[in-house]
Image 1 (cartoon, rainbow, N blue to C red):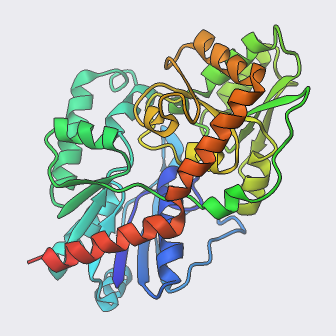
Image 2 (cartoon, helix red, strand yellow; image 1 turned 60 degrees about the vertical axis):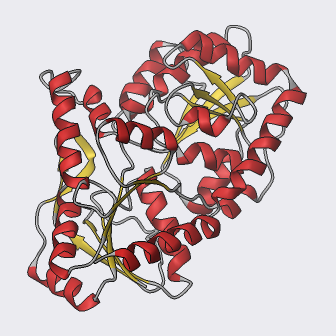
Length: 383
């Protein structure tokens, strides 16, 4: 099959959208399927560009958003890109975002009379609470307008996919139709192999992924501050980068934790997997995860997980069977749940074992089969 992907978020950005696209394309391209990816062109290309078989990437002119410089907004599709799309003879278009690039993809699909699948990764309306513009932040009217906008874009898709049932239910409540739950994949083999850090006197908490305000990493740092009053050997590693990094470094200094919170920067692939396995516990404090791929990756790596009891995290952790839940945004409860894991060796071993076994279903090959089945069905049912 020949699939054209249009996305406003892609490599080298570190986020779930990028991870899900790369994992799916990497697996299906090796099985003989062909991909054409349209994405914003980064200002700088790191030296670890993904090598994808049977795949061509069309980089579109883009500029960083003034309020969120990690995100690039494409503003032009040159005639040469349109020509490449036409000559690619796509069987379908798959869009992963609701902005400029994705809208172009929908338009191209309509002109070519081929189906469109739209994946709803992110609750854009909830991001408004973290936009540093007073008239937008915490504005219910703006949130409603965001829902109207996303409905308008995704309403043009033949099928809408979302990675979790909790998000599908939310979309149904806002009038979205043809919503199909299809999870994103993780590289289970990458994270599951290798030796884990042994539990001893020193305990490493960690977070990895996009270091942004909506991830509420500040809750984890404040929980660490409380824990260190009793356990001075507890430290935290933050793997990744993003707009909240400077703010978190400032908070670390204010809490007297600058020597105990380590900002390790962006790591990818094997380097990331090795860095993750040097830790004992993942803290997932965000109340707005639509799936939280980093949580699943941590499970595959054998870490215990303590996460916010909000949106997609409870489904991943089960009824405290695969990790412990704390009340979202509650620092004291977060610290208490971390302490419970630290103090009970038998429980943490059971949590980690249950999680690693359960998350195996999310492997790239397993999920790629589901995507191909949906692609084939959508193509067959298109008029």
